[in-house]
Length: 272
Length: 153
Image 1 (cartoon, helix red, strand yellow):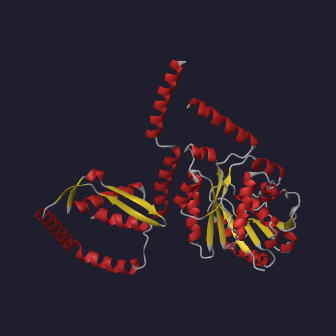
Image 2 (tube, chains in turn purple, green):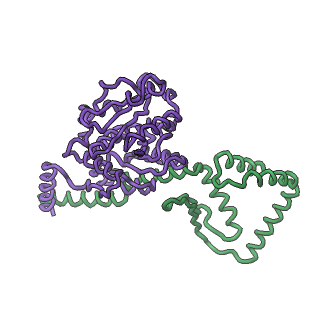
Image 3 (tube, one colour):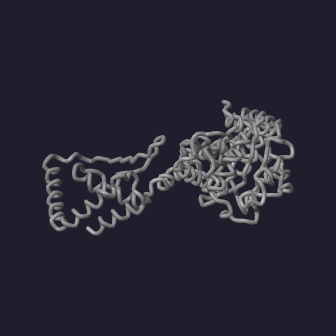
């Protein structure tokens, strides 16, 4: 087996890298793939929280590098899905505790046993970013339709293009709000794609369910009803190579929204 | 009732025209982003763009008479390629004599200059030819160096 190593990065913080990582990883595992996620955000680890694994971490990536344990011992298995593993970041150390070479070596070893190695990259473009990208051959650039996030994504794309090891990168547009796009108060998906001239791999709508799912430590892809969950599942299927059309976010989903649409339609007609 | 209707209609009318005139906030965002990304990607600050614009005006004025203030120089992106777009409102084509006169004046000027600095430039050229062979994109330092040289002259 030779797994694919994909780094999930963004430049700007707070756009949803870790959420994206947790959900794509879980979705891939649910599709029957063997997945390991590596949190490289040393000192600011959070991927364990989103997966609900924070209490089960015994060894971290730094323990592996400093040879206090074997690589396999440090992999934490997911509660529900045995296909899914996490290699946690150390919370007490900084970005210099692991080098590019060491990360490359870890990825090489994991490639033998897993279909997918997803690397959660820290925000910024400093050493932490360089380390995270070192072992990867593919990248997913997460951004939101906000100016600062798009600008930072452009910077990251520039850096990725200069890296020989990165064979392809895709754009994931997160926290899209169709209502604001409709009233021309937010950049549309097409606007962002045109400005960055990158290929899209997913469009994720803003969803309050993300907050509750994080509270519970349960990735939203496990919730069949959630639109964001569906969108993340589609991203995973596209990564595997399926041709999945993008969700139509314009259409109101719930019963309440449908009723609202129906009534506002009636009122609109009366006025005319 | 009738009055209220009328009021709403009048208000609606103004609102509509407002919207047509005002750029939506997302258009503003897109336009600002395009400009700032061009600067990020090319190392060309607004000051440098203005300087380039002025130099273009000087250069092109020899051949055509144009509206100097209206000359627009913009970086634009077309797919993967970045292009320099130059829009020049030509007022009048210069006739042959005028062009000749401008070019002769230019030649004279450069001859004088080259007399003064011929030895210096020779050395410089030799140095440069070995340095510059592979450069496609100028980095900031290079641009600054070139400009400093211009300023000295």
